[in-house]
Image (cartoon, rainbow, N blue to C red; front, side, top):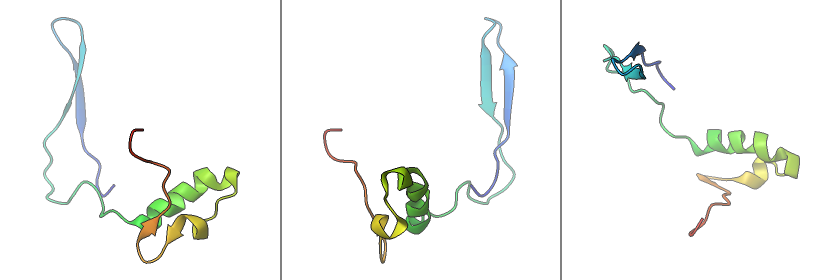
Length: 72
């Protein structure tokens, strides 16, 4: 994430809590560009208990292993 958003919580007349995002004053994007290498490092941390390494997860130049499929 590039920058943090600002939020405000308030109680409505029905005694419910509402959270709203305050408008920002920055034109900077909220998130960085997606990077498959960074995502593969993230997956490596979770999948290491099953013996998967970064080299098995990331395939240069820009692919990574996934267990997602149709119908899931």
